[in-house]
Image (cartoon, rainbow over all chains, first blue to last red):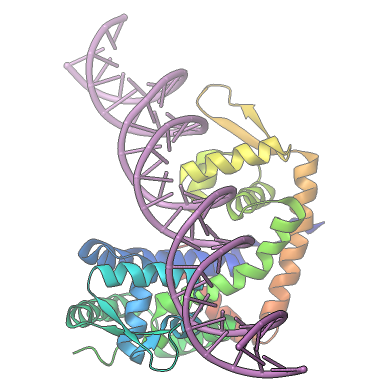
Length: 142
Length: 142
DNA sequence: TCGTAATGGTTCTATTTGTAACTAACAAGC
DNA sequence: GCTTGTTAGTTACAAATAGAACCATTACGA
């Protein structure tokens, strides 16, 4: 009889609670300043950090479904944060590239992200953070 | 210029990726076996583990918005997994209590959860898991 | 005790998401 | 060249979510 199941230590539960809490504050940054959704912020930061790439490359790297990418790209394009460039020899694909405005938004948001991260991690030791990040990466399969 | 922002170590990002991955496999258990949504599973497990309580008590404990609780409770009630009992001196509230069928589902799912947790954590040392859980709890504010 | 505020819970609406189906372009076999 | 199969990306529709507005009830204060 599993009366002894401890929700308090159940990893998916703890992960969800922590992830939700961690995202919440920062979500205000991209939401309030730029009216962005989380997927849009993710697309933006992927392009900003890893350079131009196609929608499916972002999806593969970020683990996001292509329909979400499609919608996020359309929204970012409409706000002139990115543009689509034709790929020479494959007209199905489009290379996505940040505009200067998109780069500005990216830089602003990554600054906010860094500050948020610093604030969030300040109570932890370096060793704890190393272990935490390592565990999370392994769980996520990264 | 934040060209040096590392998404790869950004905690909200890692947390989300790990949480999503961790939930996904287990979600199949309550979805396929009982047609439950995540919030329904959470309500069920809260009642199963912490005993009868009202909707808002579950919400406070689990950090779930009351509209989600309301819908989850309605769904669980319809499937006869729980019933509402009147609270003596406050007709706004209803004490929620698992039925035997609800208890069975709970026991079945917590068994699956325990197995899932065991499988997920098997690559980690006890020390790593202690640190991981402790960090997650602190981030989540639990 | 009457009026106002606060609480428990549900419902309504607008977004957001997930899944499947679809179009267009490319690739491979014959 | 055709047929068949893949891949990139979009669109359509159903399901889920968040937030506001909403009842009903209880609590509080003049």
